[in-house]
Image (cartoon, rainbow, N blue to C red):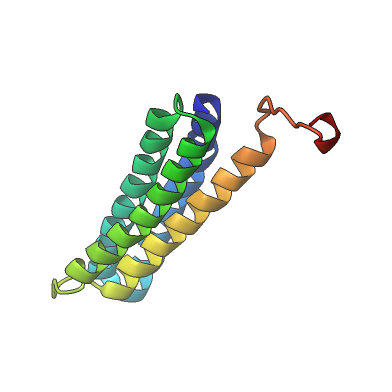
Length: 135
């Protein structure tokens, strides 16, 4: 599992950084400095939450596979709830441009999840498949 977690980080980190940069540029063009700063904050929050998911995966790697999957699913749901709460709190700050913050946050989370999927598909993991005839 640690090999998969490291592959997920390796595959996702640069596309996520590029997504944050694109979000900042687009928001700056559309909404000025206020939009760029808001996009930066949204990107950093989403990037941090994705790194927390990677950390959770590394910490649960030694557990049995069902617990790892439970931790991964729980971590994903927890991440979505925390991102929602952060967005709800940050939208009350008047100088932040909410759309830039939210769209950049969403884009980073989607790109990170997509790259996690690519890493999972490309990483060779030892798997034991037991045929039903053997039971």
